[in-house]
Image (cartoon, rainbow, N blue to C red; front, side, top):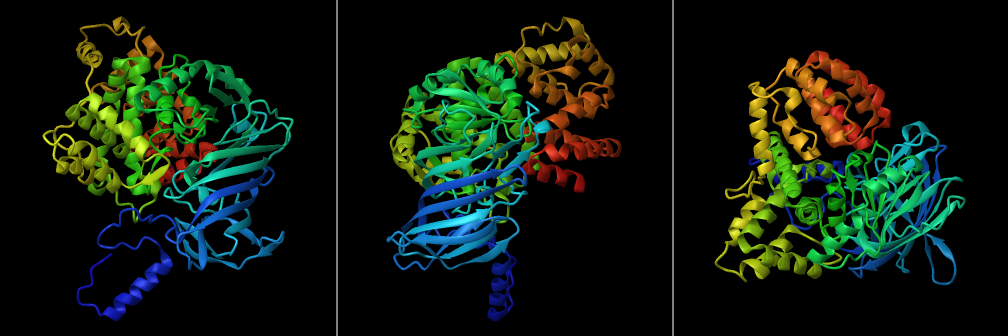
Length: 626
C-alpha cells in the first residue's frame, strides 16, 4: 500500500474499507507466514475433512453438473458461517442432513468478488457439520479444458481434463481452495457412452468403457489442487506391478514403451526416502494441448505427449512427477509463497532418481541445462521474485512457477548436501518427509526443522543465516554448486572447432548424441551463427523436421533469431499442435521482437488459440498486447 503520512485516520480507514471490498490483496507491512492470501476460506474457524462428489459431464454444453457433499470440522465452536471459494460457478442450492433422514435447505449468499480469486460462497454453519452444494460449472472454467474430437490424438472422441493448480479447483468444485486444507474424497462421475473417466484416485483398469458411471476413492487426505479429473476415449496398459499408462488407443503402446522404467524409478525413490505411500502410480497421457510437462496428481500423474521422444531421453519428467509423491503430495506447501518446498525438493529428488536409473552423467547434463535456464531467466525477474519464499500478495500464484522454486530450490539443497555430506543429508530428508507426512507446512516450519535437525546437530558446518540467505534473499548466494559435466566440455570444444570451420558440418559425429547433448550444442550457438550456418546444419541433420519436441523448440528459436524462413512452415504446425507453455511461450516472445515476425506469430496464434489451455492463452495474450 501507499504511505499517507499526513492523512487523517478517518480517511485512511475509509480507503482500507473500500479496498477490502475490491480485492483481497491488501498488503500489510509484513507478510504473515501461513496466511493464504489467495483464498476466501475461513480456515481458522472450520475446515473440510472429506468431500463426496457426484459429477455429470456434459460435452454438449461443456459443463459439469455437480453435487459436493462435505464433512466439516469446527476449529472455532462459535463459528457462524462456512466460506468456500468459487469462480464462475452457478450455485443452485445448499442443503444439510438434519440427522433424522431429512435434507434441509441452508441459508447462503454469494459474497465478496475478486477478478482473480473468484467469489466467496458464504453458508450458514449447519449443526450437522455436513453440507451439500449443488452447482453447475461455466464452459469457460479456468480449471477445465474441453477438447473437440479433432483436437485429440485419436480425432474421434471429445476429451476433458482438469488442471487445478494453483487456484483453479474452485472453478469446477466449490471448496476451500487452499493447499493448507487436506481432505479425503470419493466421487461418482457420469459420462457419455464409450468414454472413460479417470481421477487422482484408484482407477480400476478392469472397468470397461461400456459403463457410463465410474466411482473413485482417495483415502489419503490431499489438498484441493491435487483433485483431478479426465474423460476421454482412454485405454489402459500395465507397465509394472503397481503402475500403468492410460491414453488414447493411438498412442497407448508408444507411451507404455517410453515409460517402461517407471517401476525402477519408484524403487529408486523408495530406496532414497522411504515407502511409496500411494499404492498405485499410473500415468495419464493427455492431448498435446496440456500446458505443462506434467502434473503430479496422486496415483495418476498427468503427462504431456511431448516427452514421448522414442528413446526415453525425456523421462526425467516422470521422475519429477513421481518425486512429488513425497515432496508436494506427502509434504505440501502451506501457501503458494512456499511453493519451493514442493518444487525445489522435487527437482532435487528427481535428479537423484535420474542418477540412479540413468546414471550420473545424464543427471549432470540435465543439471547444467536447468542452470542455464535459471541464469537466463534471472534478469527478467523482479528481485522480489528471485526469492525462494515469495511475496505473492498482489500476484496470480501461477506467476510463481518460474525457475526460482525449481532450480534455485534444488541448488539450495545441492549446497546443503555438499556441506553436510550425502549420507547425513539423505537421512535428514528422509526424516523430514516422515515427520511432516500428510501435512501442509510453511517455509518457516522448514527453517525451524532444518535448524533443529541439521544445523545444530552439526554446529561447525554452516550458520543458519547462510541457509536463510538462500531462502529470503534474491539472486544466487555465493558458494552455489554450479553443475558441470565433461560431456558438455567436449561439446564446447566441438562448437569452437565448427564455428572456426576446423571441422566440417557433416563430420560432427552426432549419431550417438542424446537429447541433452543436442540441446546444449544448439543453445551454445545462440549469438554465434547466421542463416548460412543454420542451413548447413539443417541440410546435414534435418533439424527442421526433428520429431523430438525439445530439440525442435531450440531449433525454431534459432530460426526466429536468424530469420531462417525455411523452418517457419514446420514451426507453424508445431505451434498449432503443441500447447505446452515451456515450448511455445519462448517462441512467441521471440517472434514478438520484430514487427514482421510479430504479425506472423499473431496469425498463427489466432489459428492455434482455440486448442490452447486458458493458462497458455493468458500468457500469450500478454505477449501480443505489449
